[in-house]
Amino acid sequence: ATDLPHDSPNEEVSIEGQVLQSNPILESFGNARTNRNDNSSRFGKYIDVRFNPTGKLAGAQIETYLLEKVRLIHIGHGERNYHIFYQFLAGATDEERKKYMLDKDTSIVDFDMLNQSGTFDRRDRVSDKDNHFEMLEAMETMGFLPETIQSLMQLVVSILFIGNMVFESSDPETGEEAYLVKDHTSVSAASLLGVPFEGLAEALTTRNIMAGAQTTVKKFFTIDQAVKAKEALIKAVYGAAFDFVVKKINNSIKEEGSEGSTGASSRNLTGM
Image (cartoon, rainbow, N blue to C red; front, side, top):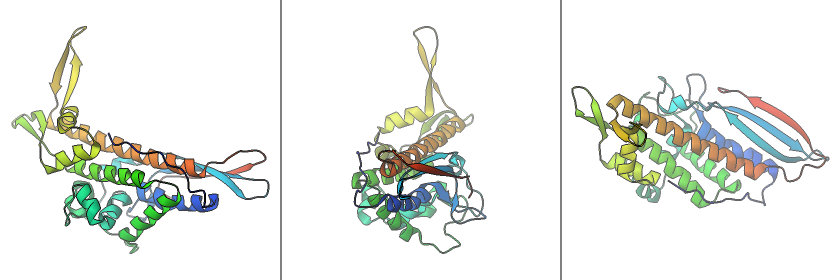
């Protein structure tokens, strides 16, 4: 699997600046266009802010919960998936596209996770490309290393490829014994995840069942079961990436020493 390097916060930027710069990052990974709001938060957030005796911000910690993972699989009419997918495809360089196995003309309409709602833009006219570069700048401010950023973008693209993967059956009439079609999409997904194609295919189409004390039997999934396994993988990978981003932000804005500090907290609910 993809390894993410160790990062450290940018000590030249104040805590206040870093707290503010966390917003473009969290919004990219946790916000989406809904029917009511073009930049709706799809997760809950609890912020604990600490001040030193002079009233200056000393640090903060962010706790997130209830990320709307079902959005990764099903998008309502007139809505979009998470901003990061659209932003990356709008702002990716030719070098990044080549590195992540994307053709130069590959766009948001080519991915099932993005095209199912028929909605690709934002009503508020905010540019996905501009937001992508704003997020990258914020990540740099927060101390994300270039290697970390590229690893995250690699995971983002891998998820899009996973969403396009197709299963077929050795018995089309019953849909039994599903197998993962080996094509550019599935091979790219496996490569970007850092796993062999055969390992990915087996994990999504089979399971081992204990038949006795020391005997296991391999059972093949139906196509429907394989699709459910694929959807679970998408949710797991994206959820892990989101949690990682929050952890890196917290490492950057955490309070160094708490003597004499006072706190305040704020809770935002999903959809705010």
